[in-house]
Length: 166
Image (tube, rainbow, N blue to C red; front, side, top):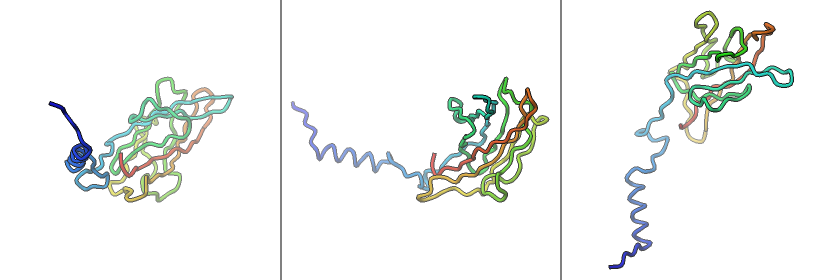
């Protein structure tokens, strides 16, 4: 007996898979977006050609460290914690706060934990979530830290981002 798969048969199988729920929309209320409950951002001093930068990565993507330009994915009610890595070259974290007041994601300066070893902030539960054609809502913030060797204060401006879909 010969097995023949004709074009109409393959087409019917693909349509059946599609209608069975194989391709849900990210904006579908039956398929809610899940954001992280907590994200930790790790910080380390990076010196290149005598210039000082901040090497950063977050707990959601530990293999991807970047210099001065981290875009951390958060969502409404996400708790964000900043901490130094082992051998970070950072004496202390001085401040973490929004670059501009009144933004939708970063409600105000982060609070200190453990004598300036860590900072934390909670994204407001009513933070806006992008819909439609908007891919993400993003807000710049600042980190001020003190270098361990020289005591120099350094400031950088990374981002927190709420994506439309994960």
